[in-house]
Amino acid sequence: MARALRRSIILDFDGTIVDYRERFYQAYCNFAKKPLDCKTFWGLRAQNKKMAELLDSPHFLKDFDMALESPDLLQEDKLLCPPEFLHALKKKYNLVVITNRKNEKALLLQINTLGIQDCFSEIMTTADLDKQAIISQYSKKDVVVGDSEEEIIAGNKSGLITIGVLSGLRTREQLLKANPRVIIESIMELPKVLEGLDFLV
Image 1 (cartoon, rainbow, N blue to C red):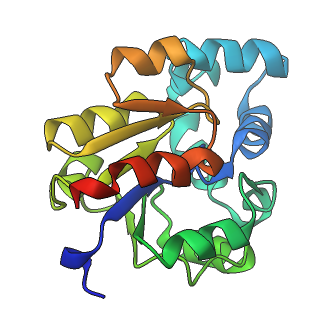
Image 2 (image 1 turned 30 degrees about the vertical axis):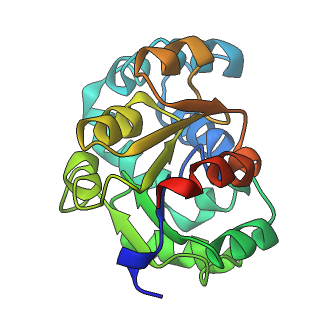
């Protein structure tokens, strides 16, 4: 069925579909001169502390970004839902991945390794376009699901339905400031929310 006839669900990848925190923290420890403990590190990240500051030097930032998407570290990511869940969701909706990752080859390899390569009609990185530009290509009946303010704000600007998810770094209070229509604990709650929206198609 063509995209125009089905609702598209635009899903952020890290923090929404996969738990990336172990990978991120390990990459940080590999580059920081005096790494903070895990709890302190994530507390500062939740307060939007910049990685250049946490790494002691902005010179490490480029190497950190490259290491973050290395195949070895990507193995640390865990799916936040069973593959069968995404396969079932795909039968009813066009599932689209958007991500700030730059290494598309490593992303596609990871998606294949996780067994979810057939779940998505489109996989889009921000290597060429930012999330706002990507999301603006979709219609007002479509849905943006993300764990940060970035996706929610982009979706709201384009008039799409926005859903915040608490499986990432942000708290409910932080996501509420971005004004999503709904906040859920994880994407496992998505089908019930979508059923309530389907009359809008």
